Image (cartoon, rainbow, N blue to C red; front, side, top):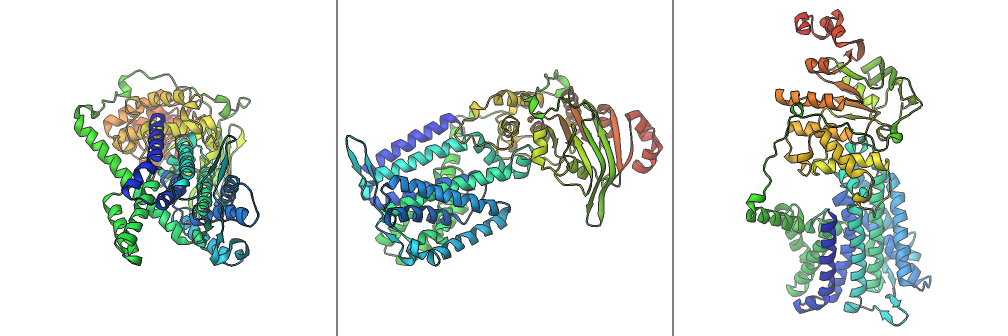
Length: 616
């Protein structure tokens, strides 16, 4: 989200919140319903950061909602705490702490396993509230007598009691929460969270501590839930036990989906639809308990026909209408210049070279000794010794099943070797995480494109560059991307290097296959690696695309150390200074391209003795 769009959304939200108490009564809206919409909307802001922006579906938000609410209510009703606002803040902090502790355990699992853990957590908290802690929470009776806030401004005192009198306080809390959420999603942290949603494995491979960022989103969502739970008690003058119920988490998810996830205002819209429909169906139509059936049907229809929710549907409609009104402004296909026909740009200079380089080390940049990998009884690699000098362009060839990709994964620490040792710039990196190795300056591109598909080309490169410029984890939650020193230059240099400057703002889904392969290389380059491993960069390309990519590889090889795996031996013999041949997971032979072409072992074992093909 751009800064201009964020400010516009904040301005529109402020105007709507100010106008609501004057307009909504004319439409017959009850103040209590409007206030409940604000509380649910605030609750949904944090959940949307977790679900919509990070891609983590949690069914346990009621645990934090109830924790924040009951801590604040207990302080105000049983402990005699004098300040409502301070009690709300303490409740929010308590929920955030609980969220952090739960995140330490639950976030180590992904997908359905993470979701099921959060279901269990919600049920555990509900049980604890009704039984072991009933003396503090009131059990099934809850905590009555929660006071409303009083604000002393010196020259006057503001009493927020109930109904429309309480509305300004709740509206201010929601607006403040929205402003903070907008700052978070457009910060460097927000950019990384969206990358994790799209492809967590690649976010980790470019140098981000994915688990730490997931935990951050989880704590943010818990904090928003905690403050919303506290406001629920203030709104009702009573903290109800059903705040801990699983139904609360389910309602939050449904409201977010109805309104539109990944929009921030979607949960507020979804809450308005949900609560106003509930009141209409119960009070006006007199359906009683049957309102849930009708609302369930409405939910199913919205999910089927508005998969992006109400806000997402309106956004898509606006974009379609804009294209219809201004067809001449629709972007035309961009003619991408051939790398072979354009001068190679200046190489990308690492903006933080000291971050990677071990200046005191003068030996081989990479040295693997006795590298072995077994998967049960299957030996993928065995006893490989492999050394690369700084500035060298090394090629690796071998038939399918030779263990090339497994070998690469061990070198970048994606998988741990069964035996052997890997030394990078004099550091033993055996057993390190792929994130840590990338931070040291060793990274790779993938054989099968691993991109952030719903982001633009520029956003993809930005995510990788942020890992280089900020390290693997940093909590600059309220800092704009444009305040990251050197980021714009790093991104522009990388785009120029891989010849994607003219496609910078195109979604990845609109790129041709050859462009995606160049972007795959660009993601690896954006972190200014000391050693770059390229896994079959020419795979699946047409002859014309292969010529262009070979020219690109020649241009980026200047002043860099590259190791390339590929089946296109003609291209690899043209590029590489030395060739390593693998067969059946073992090192067969190493040498210059000319030595490999004339090697009898290679001719017999790798090419079946077709000497003419090698000599041509």
